[in-house]
Length: 326
Image (tube, rainbow, N blue to C red):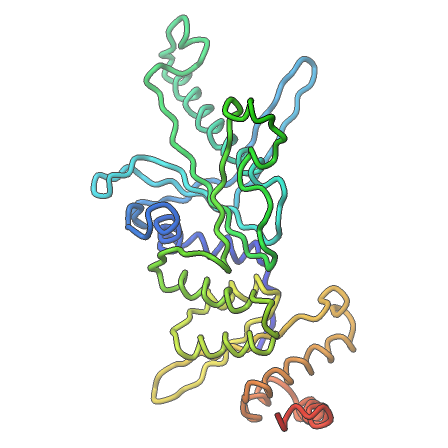
């Protein structure tokens, strides 16, 4: 079986491009699971945003790229007007995340403003006075922008959730200083009313995988048991593998003419040092075989991927450490 390195940013972007999964997340986050946003009314938009700041002789161009952004088209059925919804995937804690979200949203509004200005220029319908100065007319409205930050890290997010948290504000001034709040989703701890099976499975498996209070072998065991009891899609397993830094290998077993999936997670050990070193690769394979033995995977299934020599070596190691007698 060919091994591929799963890059979390690429895999996560691809996962959330799915309209059903995207809509389910925002319906759970914003509307307590009620289907206000319909997948059929979502359209993906260009994720690149750019601004040019000019001041005197200084001109600076800034470009930002969102992970995923979609527009919800006007819907009479669900009573939703045009709006933009964006997702930012965050693997690590970011102390300035509220400021970063505010910047992304500002870029999205500025982009809409430029598009509106361009429309009026093409139509040549500017009037004198305020419209000419503003380059938009009194009736023009921009689409609201809602950004969700999804945090996949193992540490507790105990850093700013809004702009005020980042500022040292005298109490007498607090109510005069504009705040900017961000929407955070912690995949390990949340009470979202998710209805999409893939989303529910993804968040539940990550809850097991990221619980560092429990030993790794028990977390793996929980994941395997969950996958045996639920129909977990390959896209979910790939996404989990990319987030946890593991390789997800899919063993398709025929049983009573039904196709079942079993997932074995190969833990990457010091990936940067292992790559390119034969001894590192050998040790990683031994660890993978050890994990399969711990999970009770039959030897004939292990031999589908590893050689007899590698299996015998792992069995000898296990016998010395007393693992097989536990």
